[in-house]
Every structure is written in C-alpha cells, then in structure tokens.
Image (cartoon, rainbow, N blue to C red; front, top):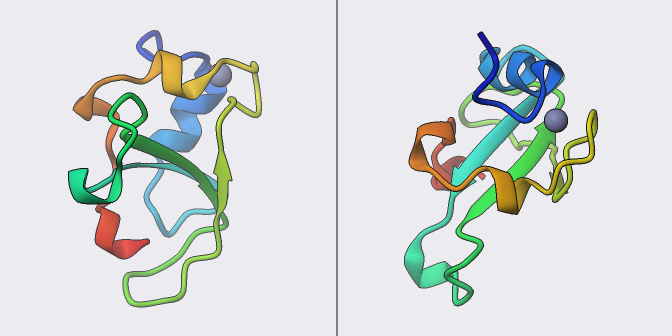
Length: 87
Ligand SMILES: [Zn+2]
C-alpha cells in the first residue's frame, strides 16, 4: 500500500489530513521562488493546522523514520499534498 513511499511510516503521515498532527506536507515551490530547479519540492513536518492559521512547521531534507534523502526520492508532483500559498 505504501510502497510508493520511502517507508510505511512516511506514507501514513503523508496521507493523513492537514488537521491531523503530526503530519508530513510536500509543497512544490513556485518556479519563480526556486532558482535551484533540481530541488523544487519542500518537505515539512507540521503539528496539524487549519487553512488561515499560522502553520508551525519544520523543513526537513531526510525522512525522520528511515533517513532517505527526500529530494532524491520524491521527484514527482504526485506527492504534493499542500499548496505553496498555505506556507
Ligand atoms: Zn522514510
């Protein structure tokens, strides 16, 4: 079920809704904001939030569960689960 993810725990935290803490959000940056075209995705741990709230977040590069380099592993829009304007 979670084979598309680096590990099952990442998959679980990625698929919960934004209101359910703790969760992982993947954001695709606007091209204008991202001079480094290799790393256009950003990965965040959040405690859960609603639209319009200030979003407390931790920008991460490595999976907190298995250590995978997220920039190397997640290179597709299919993993994006939040809009850049929310953050
Ligand atoms: Zn992982």
